[in-house]
Image (cartoon, rainbow, N blue to C red):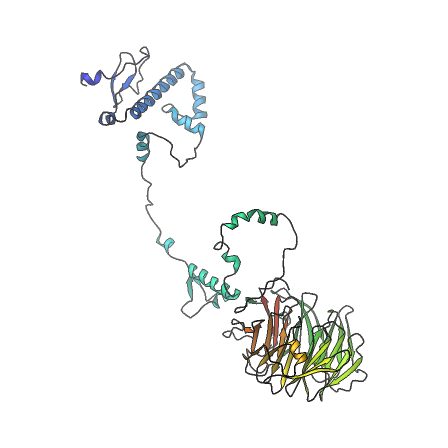
Length: 552
């Protein structure tokens, strides 16, 4: 070693200490004082970079401190007995060569924080010199292959195939197909699915209100807002009579006014009651009437009775639901009709209206089933209905005229011509007393204002619905007067739902491609418009869930 470098080293302050064997001839040491520890010369980067003297001095001081600690530990180890040294090795491990390893074990793992630690550039360079992460030696190609899902052997996935070539789909494609089917069934993307996209800055301010909402209980269901036109969000549910299948034509479908129950009656001589849940619709009870093909069945206004008439009999059956008794009414005093088929129950539950022949229709007491009076119009009776307040009767005649009668005085209040009608087939009034709908043989449904029907001889309809081409045999308003259901039993899939007050038809019903509705003979809405049901000639009572309405 040159003499000029040897002069740079500083002698150890503790000259009497014995030198360490393991650190006596380290390659980075250049000189040692007499009898003192080896001293480390200035590193090469200090000579090359005189601008960093502090960093180099810190490294030299750290190395010197480490050697001093190791020398002191060895001095203490020499005074310990062999039994104590063996016990320490069992407890702390063999850390004779490295005291820092023992400290790391006692401290445990440290959490690395991604912040500026203020380390010197020398320490940062040392951290960057860690070996790179090793790559896997071997990869399985089958793990990278996309797994395919068989569509043919699953009866639920088979309906989602668009063509025969899609017998297998990848998981991503199947997920997209399921998403499309869900959006199609819902009539679009539901609002809850777009919550994350519609978040605004005001959401942070409303978090406290949401916390208060979740911390208390109560009824948070409010009345539905106005129904939008265009697309009606609905879902096809399980058939109402799925637990009692039949092939006979369904003549009547009606929801119970107070319970979550639906009644289905048909030409198979049976009246059946089902619990409505939209999934299985379990059967509650079936009433069989021997040799009595049912023409019409209807609940009373309070829901305690079921009335039924036949296609070829004058007997009126009354089933008392509370007592469980079936009461036949064979003859009504003063009623000379040979066949009793079509009838209507007043909304207040006071009257029963029976349509007869030769233009006669008869008013009976609902409580006693006695005749109160009869009224007559020109021509034959095509259809009749009560007003929403049960004070008036609207009767549609076979010559295209509509008669309005007062129930109490049984006098004709007005007579007007249904515009464009040769002869009428059906008539209905809205629950709110605003509209009167008249269906004719040519497939046209005229929607009138009730006030104009009471005052004018030739009222102009608000709108003429011309979406059907055959005779309109069924008309039904929903309880909120936002939907008018129209149907014809003369043509398959001839059913439409009309939005009110815009008087436009919902474009997504019926689904023409499926063609599962067939000929419609009867329709009804649940008390709060949550469900819509219709019966066809194949013995199926189809049922749909209307998502706009939150309750049954």
